[in-house]
Length: 397
Image 1 (tube, rainbow, N blue to C red):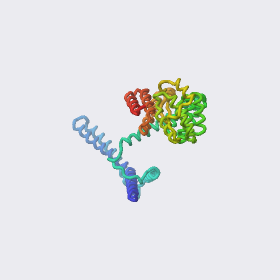
Image 2 (tube, rainbow, N blue to C red):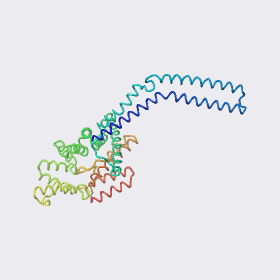
Image 3 (cartoon, rainbow, N blue to C red):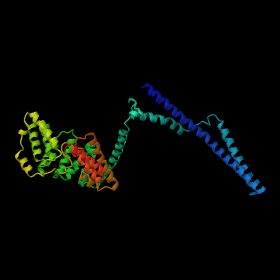
């Protein structure tokens, strides 16, 4: 470690010395370089003048007059150069530095050292080029750039909503964007505004409640549970509301009640519902905790009645249990129509990219892959859409 600091000090001192020396030379030599340049020009003019006289372009009288004028200018320059040399003989005149030059030469290394002490990692081990993951570094740079663009667009959307506070879809889009950016409290605030605008819409209720759960480390608190129960009353088939109510019971120690709720959810779910795998895992886990056979628990009468009138296939929900990776939904796309073309494209692509990044980290999410496929189709990227759809099918959902 001491060797590193010695090297840093040596490099800083060398850089400061070179910078100060360069400034000193520039300050003393600049007038003489200009005078020498003028002298070269006048000497060339004298040679050209002699050639014109020999070719007969100028008469002897004209050439003599022009030569006299040029020589006069040369003498004037010689006087200026002589005065500059006399001034340079004064002690410190040639190397005198202005306060600004000293400030630049000394402040630059000091500022660099301060920034390194604040942000640098001198304890980090060496990273030979051959051992570096260039693709990962490039991806990290791209993600930082996209995150910056996303933050800029989100701030613009927030400013627009300040002027149009009754825009429901705008608040939903803002809340989802904040969640994707990790701004939990801002996300809750935006989704709460959406809920206040539409307190009877089960989709809005679930979205607000789910944000409370996601930002509370997956814990279903009292407010979140109350919201999910309200959503289930408005939409008895809502799988997200039912899942979180069952999860709240399980977290509260009511394993029997949670098991019954998951059995009911499975009964009313279509055969191709992407959340069935998770529901089956919860049923098996709860039955094991209770020491009972999962097949011994049957759906309630209300669940059987709903199952009898349930659709044959799963609806295109924007999400569902478990917490799938956030991404653009149909409402996001519609809300984005209020933005300019460039802003809309950047916002949508930013959310799609974040969904793709999260699926790379957690690929066992068929619902997320299907959402990604739908988003790619909206963007017209059919090849990527087909690849995402293939990943969803490969997971057996």
